[in-house]
Amino acid sequence: MSFRFELFSTEILYEIFDYLSSYDIFHVFINLNHRLNNIINVYTLKVDLRNISRLKFDYICYYLRPEQVISLIFSDDDMNYNSVLNFDYLSHCLTNLTLTCLINKTFSFEFIQHYLIKLVNLESLTIAIKLDLIDGKQWEEFIRKTKIIKFNFQFILSEKINFSQNKAILLDSFRLAFWLKEKHWCINYTKDRYPPLSTVPSNDEQRIFYSRYIEHLFLDFNKPIDDLSNYRFIHVNSLYLSGLTLPSIDNIMSIVDLNQIKELNMSHIKNISIGEIHLLLEHIPNLNHLIFKNFIPLFKPPSHIYSFTIEEWKFSDDLNLFCRMFSHVQSLKIDIISLEMMIELIN
Image 1 (cartoon, one colour):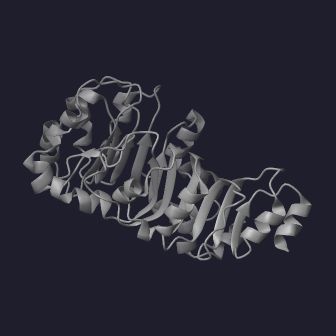
Image 2: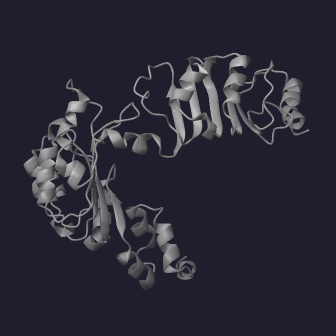
Image 3: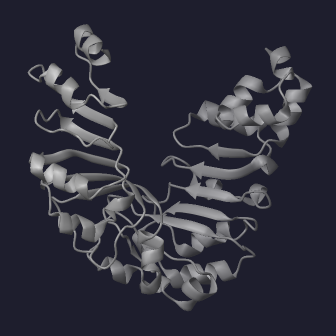
């Protein structure tokens, strides 16, 4: 085994290591030969200690060199937090830190700051934090005490947290000049909504949330969509519609530019007529992939749509009719329920 790996360049070994955990790297490759040991000892590690056994933890610590660590993730309610947060031995090498262990613990901001301030090269901090520690002024004062040039952080609110205060007010402390003018950093509240509540200036909302390229856009018309009336999504590749019925064309076009759509998924529209389908497709000239939940017998797809997905095929569906209606199809994804069906479709 060691001889085979001797044939690989250092770059290829690094590519392999990128797919492995820290424990796997040490457990599989350490002490096979001197070259591999030297390569491992200089490889930068992203150490994830979530849900790890004590045995594996000790094994990693035995071989780990502090200067290798560029990212560290903790999440364990049984850890000793006074020792976990003592990062003195990593202070000059750690650039990325994720702490998902604080949400159920009671820490003061001063306690957290005392340990984080020592990480002079920290560039990215992801922290699951209690609601009362989301204070833009406190974090501003902390950042000003550091030498950090680039500081990305994210607050994760536990699902256990309930708060009655207006979510927009929650972000007010991050609308100060330090965040928006000096650092150009914006905070978003993204749960269950788009566009998110954010500190983004209103004149930048369209550029940031609507004009950008969006691979998949999901519109659920079972829920009121009141917050999208000011702008339209103008670069959407795939559109997924859901609802009891299909909304009016004008309603859909007020939300998204249909000229850019390449893929349309209507599998979760419960009641829809063939006329409504054709009317919608007339407004999507560049569509090439269409997704239905079931085969619609009297629907004849336009010739420019050459790719189809039918999520559920029923025994009662007319296969011969389907083959005639979809004779121009180049790509078809469908459940095959018998060998005969597969042969018929191929023919």
